[in-house]
Image (spheres, rainbow, N blue to C red):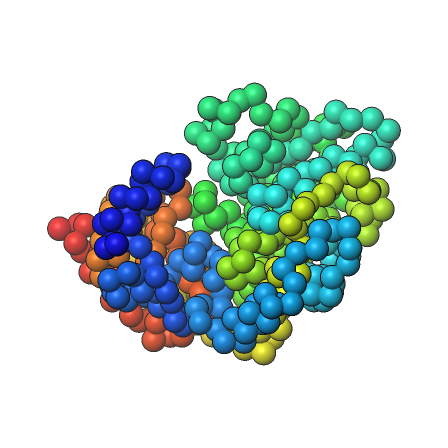
Length: 399
């Protein structure tokens, strides 16, 4: 089949929950993707912040192939070595005490919510607790995750959602304080808001929320699904602030392409929250994803991924700032590390489409942000190439 035939087939057979670009990707190498026609694209989206190691990483691929030949699945009724090793490395990187592997970031959010509710139930001897979430946040599309997602557009068709959720304004400590009651059991937020428009938490805000949580025995849940795994220059974004959560969620680059997520917790939370029978997963933590996660942590160290982010991110920021200074329709740059956004007065969907014509993959966030979350292995020369292609796309839309 040719490209259009593949697209037509997909539109007839797949449930239409995505407005996809007219692009059928076939393979990747390094930081480039190739479509079924052989056209090359510089990838500054990484599968929405997933493929941190880029494409065609031999060590990663070999580790997965080796595990395929050994064992894919056992269920969680038994132990398996790859996942035990993955857990040890994940806990060392996060300085958390316990981890539960899921199949996605959304599942990790569901587990984090349940852990917080069970902690409060154990402590107080009753249910009926509340969670404070942030406006303009995004945590997933299942009912629990959607309930703590601060976007009415996503929520409205699926109401009634999970009760007991209040919303505060991100980076506004007084707004959070105003929502706290004696029923509050957790405060959940992204350390860097992603889908809402690339807004990093302010240090004073995060420290203030942590102090409130400590004072009132409220659990701080930090969603690191998009901003974690080295993207901001630290392994997890909260490590830039020195503000440790009680529960943390992670996914995306945790497996660099295989479906895996995780929620982490301190021993304090583990002692009073989920016990046998409270939570489970058939596929979560299977040997295949365990091998992937374990290898990812090894390769982050071997390839000095964090050092590369520290080297390339300031250069990317400098080049993006120059674009903002050059064009009136670009009004601001926001972000941390290799998670960057340009606020744009032009229709950002059109900019993304025109970028594809130039051989560049970028995505959007919120209503007016061009989002860049490239593989963490990009080099300065790739930044230069991206800027050149992006400028052509911007000029085409502005023409």
